[in-house]
Image (cartoon, rainbow, N blue to C red; front, side, top):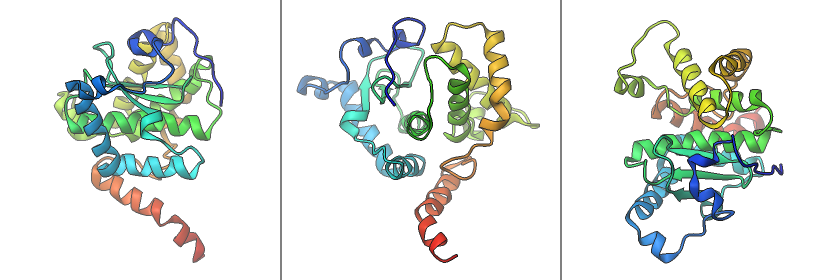
Amino acid sequence: MDQTKQEGGYGYDLFPERSKRKYKEGSIAERLFTFNNKCQVMLQFAMETSPYAKLLLSAMKSSGCKILKDRHLSCEDCDGTVSGGFDAASSQIVLCQNNIHQQSHMNRVVTHELIHAFDHCRAHVDWFNNFRHLACSEIRAANLSGDCSFSQEAARLNFGLKQHHQECVRSRALRSILAVRKISREEAEKIVDEVFDTCFNDYAPFGRIPHSNRDAKFANRDYENRDRYYANL
């Protein structure tokens, strides 16, 4: 789907290198630069070992949207408040090399942004003009990426029992929307509430909420064996 990047109010100020070129090709000097080199290494490791990323990459390929590392994923310096983003105008995932310093963080960011890329591939998402579309993908990304896992919430000192996972997803989706769109908190909350149930219960392509690497491995195994299962029906 062809979407034109529009300036102002769409979060591009958080990714200053987006305005310099259509997509980052990476000079030799850039690849030798410490942050960029570390980012590239962690990205490759995530793509090869994270069960979340592996499932999403397979699902993208099956949907006709194969991800090419050098074309669709770019390590760049970003605003200090973000770790990554999905640029619908260029169908490219941005990984903030100056803000991602641990492999576990890289794995979550890659997974989160791949969910946006998967949504972009499989659905007619109007990222720039339809706030409900944006909210739905942000809800799905927060729900399925591990952003709201018990370990992550414990590290943030956020604890709760009743529907804690749902509240975490709601909160993180809301924060993401407010970071990239100039709308009031009240309006954003209303939009999230309107689409929450439908989008929270959309588990594609995982088939379940992967609360841990173990869950993601099972989901990835099931996805890889889906054709064998249906062939035996």
